[in-house]
Image (cartoon, rainbow, N blue to C red; front, top):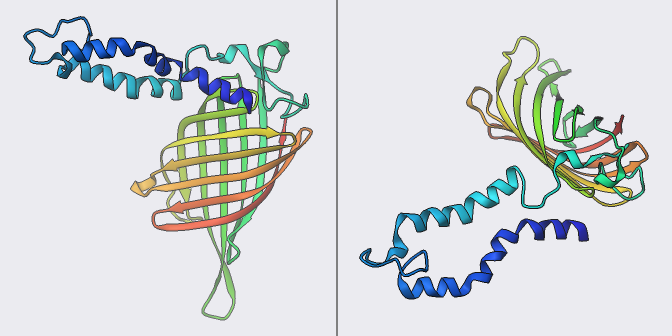
Amino acid sequence: MKKICILLAVSLLPMLAQSQKLEGMKDALRTGSSGGGGRGEGRGGGGNDNSFLAELIFDLAWQPMWWLFYGGPNEIRPNYVGYNDYPYADDENGLYLPAEYEPVKKMSLQLTGHLQTDEDAVYGGYLQARFSPNRAISLDVNRLQLLETLDDDQGGTSTDHFSITNFNFAYNRIHHEKFQLWWGAGLMLLNGGGNEILYGSPSFNGGFTWYFKKPLSLYADTQLGAPNGVLARQNQLRVQVHLKQFMVYAGFQGTKVGDVRLPSVAVGTGVWF
């Protein structure tokens, strides 16, 4: 946790550095110039010109967005980290290892699956394969198959089907030994089973894993798409227990298509190769 705090503090250095220039701010206020050098003559108070607005947008929006989506100052780049054999394989670090642990794995493959239920008539299963050919990107394919037991007019029952399949490309944004974060894009496919039409759309995905204390970790992800113009969303939040290269987990799987929500309890397992 201490290392995570240090990492966040380093990422904020460009903003914190502004506090060392208070006198320049005061001078700019006195002279009516955004440059603070007395060049505001004839501009009717140059602090309101377009350059001030542009700098404000840059400072408040661009730099934090650049850090969030790409990288911050002095941040370790992907080529200086590697993969652990599996989370906590060395009893300390999560999935990533710092550079001093060379040689390290440069690829990772994870398989995950769970069963879920909404404690009513809807149940199903989820399968995921996540392959990282290098430390910066991951390729992910996953499928959620839902089943619902329905009563028919003859007093019997029938089973309804619905599935969501995702093909994702993800950029592994943060490669800390205790924390990883990713975001990316892909393709979402929805199918009602049988002769139903298969609907698809571009999608967004993102998530994180926090390896806060061996053998535990906290995982969350989201996938968003709009097949046929209908907003579809999948969310996961789970607590994972790592048992060497295997894990077991329990948590929440939330699915929403249009106005229909399906909150479910999920119990599953995973393995790293």
